[in-house]
Image (cartoon, rainbow, N blue to C red; front, side, top):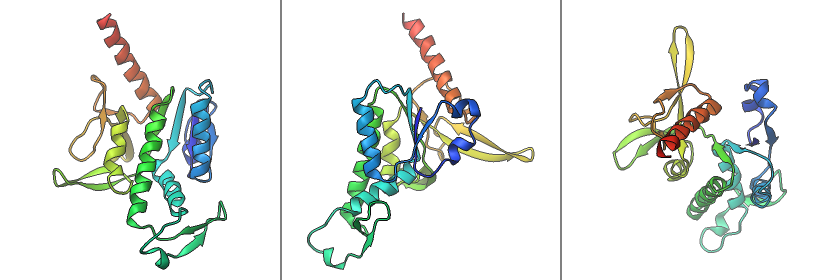
Length: 221
């Protein structure tokens, strides 16, 4: 598996060594470097990776917005902009985003995820979670920590969207993956037969889904 880890190597450190040996870590410094790697993956269909993982979309969004702020703007508001120097590229970029920047950054993120899901390999992505208001139902739910409508639109691009929850039990903290929505946790897996709560083991979850698919395909045959 190829893992894009913008935030460091903390995720891999907690994995079993048997899993670590099967992971190649890439730490792109900005949006441009990430897109160069993605173009290579798209062209080199025989790259040998069974899966690609982005950890996480929340930190990757910072790279996306930085790339948008490096674009020049015209018209009203441009004269009031404050500029800083990007430490990675040494290019001048704006400090304060305008309304159009949020829309462009959100669309760039959506297109990035959409292109990843179209690759001939498994695609995994993580994100921090935050409280978001569901404008349709008028209640707060847990959603990916992404600005604007991206928090509700990005999960729709995945065939499986699970959320991790924790609670104290017997003097220790127990972590579980929620696979179906419960009103507060907005999850969903496009496979019938998966338990609502499973252990936080993504390879194990994939094995469960694959076994369900195999049974369904056998019945259809």
